[in-house]
Image (cartoon, rainbow, N blue to C red; front, side, top):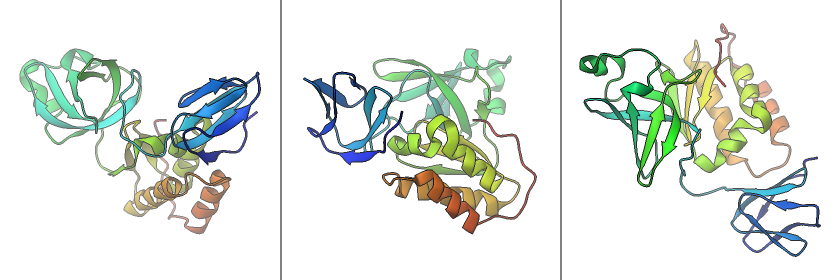
Length: 232
């Protein structure tokens, strides 16, 4: 059972009852689950948690992120993933052989790449391309949103982003760091997907958002194009 979301402030009671458990951004005091930070309260089953609406990206193991190659070393690439820490993609984390003398032919400075975070150290992050749908992203447009809005953009079990993909005939990859890549056969479709995502971000706090996005897409239908296979 999932209850409606509401904006809460630190110290506010989200829900009461022995059966409820505290999740991210909450704490338990007696029977009350209390908000520890500002954000959107969500109750899913017995778990209560806070979805942040502000703040910077905090890298986590297993996250899919989108970054820009900023430098090439003798054994890999430095990648800007919109984090306060540096990120490194080793040539050993590429799922095919790359000659160390030809690194720039695979990924050059300025290239956009989808990666997975394979390790988070004290002041550095290791990246990997060893998963489905990762690699250099060519063509399309990129969009940056607050990383804390990413869960709303993706939606429950991917429902929101899937709706936007289908409604705009676009391939979309959402990075947990707030960078989003959109690619379609026509620029009109890419721009419509961008508008839909920005609509979600600007209305992230309201109820019934999925239905409102459907109405938005129905009222702004793009031209028909060939549907590309999209990576979730």
